[in-house]
Image 1 (tube, rainbow, N blue to C red):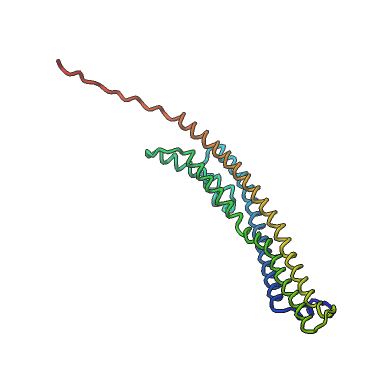
Image 2: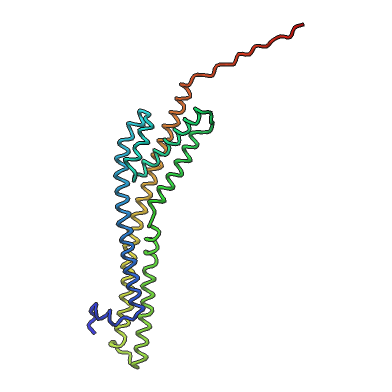
Length: 244
């Protein structure tokens, strides 16, 4: 036996071949997740940077309608969703007060920001659970094939009644290949999972920082509007004295 790839494949049993096929599928799946997530994060970063440049002047001018219009231009920006969501909730509260509704506008904006951040982070983690599963389970899938390779080696010894290298080598090679391939699939998946989770954490910090700055601005704007609003005129009541 020359231990060439094709020859080893021919000597493999159905179980070992199934294990290798499963590992190939897991490898392709993890590669697809990694590629899609890197593209998604790159787009989110690029649009968020462009949005932060454009929104700065609008917030300084208190052009809240302009901020909301930026949602159309930057649909893949988590930063845009958070800032525009807070501004939209604030604008809704101001409009509601004009028709008589009363509630804490800032608290409503804070709840809206929290919901939006959680939704955006959940979208950014999409697929990473599968990547983590591949990184943790691929070595065990390889070990499953290893177990059957060792079984085949002992079966060959039992059938031939000999324990020389030529008898046990095919089963040992089969076992080592599945183990090695399982590790080969798991390591890149683990590395990329940690890298992508670090990127998600960075986005989380940026989103919470932007949300805090936006809420501070809305609090100041609400205070300015209250100070600029005319004070309510006191009601003048006339009491009619009863005739004696």
